[in-house]
Image (spheres, helix red, strand yellow):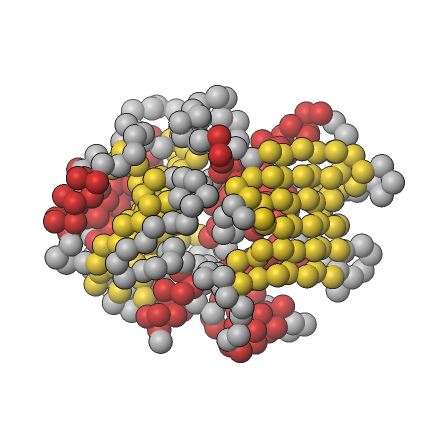
Amino acid sequence: MNKPGILLEVVQILTDIDLIITKAYISSDGGWFMDVFHVTDQQGNKITDGKIIDYIEKALGPKGDTIDGVKTWPGKRVGVHSVGDHTAIELIGKDRPGLLSEISAVLADLHFNVVGAEVWTHNRRIACVVYVNDDATCRAVDDPTRLSVMEEQLKNVLRGCEDDDKVARTSFSMGFTHVDRRLHQMLFADRDYEGGGTTTEADYPSSFKPKITIDHCEDKGYSAVSVMCKDRPKLMFDIVCTLTDMQYVVFHASISSDGPYASQEYFIRHMDGCTLDNEGEKERVIKCLEAAIRRRVSEGLSLELCAKDRVGLLSELTRVLREHGLSVTRAGVSTVGEQAMNVFYVRDASGKPVDMKTIEALRKEIGHTMMLNVKKEPSSAKTPEASGWAKTSFFFGSLFERFLA
């Protein structure tokens, strides 16, 4: 049966277990919806694992509760059991080189252990959700004095040299929030889509520039949103998430990816039943969708690091990256048992491609204590190069499985 937000729920479940959606047909008029998804695993193979199929059926079935689902499938949401008790901290502010290093140093100094984190940067803004617990008890921190000291110090770091109170916000939450959706919401609320021309073409090469158009579909009374851009994992999730959070309902959609490019068309109306007839509103939707697509785009290098977890590990890693002149554009941190897995998408602090000599120096410095895998993010349609222990991109689901197996 149809219900508000059902499409996002379905897409979220499929992307959380790292399935790649290659084609989709969405139809939901009236009380029912009918969706067809063509999916593969990360290597492009058919899904044959019965556990995955059972999980999808349970999560979407009549008794399916996505919050309970979190407990059965290790994903990236707050409340994953293997992460244990934790406090979630949300941070948003102006990005600058070395900021992540400063944030993690504050947490380490205050004896907070980082058990998971997701960091996105876009249009000179940074948003991160960090899960911490007390380094001695491994429990969530609920002492108001400690929390307010941490909040004050993090605000100072985020504020940097600016006095304006509005530039930075921190908040704590204990709820079940889907991390990627929360990051989209935080950056959207922060109006990162109003770049005001600060994003240079060097930051986002023309190959990444999405082509988005909005037309009126007269006979059915919909607005047709058409998106053409470079294909990548989680693209459909990012678009559907943004439309949903902007209060638009998707009635029909058709998605296909042909080689390196994706073509997606959505027939939408606002929740109040109106279409997008106002030019200003059309422009806003286009800008917001562009921002949603770009937040997860990473050109350059990704560094995947796997090490025995310890307090201050993130602080140490980000300090080393900073000392080698590397700027982090996106990061994912997760802990399973005693293993910490970190992936950093990095650029040279001056915006140039990273020099391989820098990577070699980095390998010398940290290679003896942890596994470092360097991957070049494809800047063209060529297949990504891979080396070392991971032949696929860094996806949490598969890594959790590997360590839980």
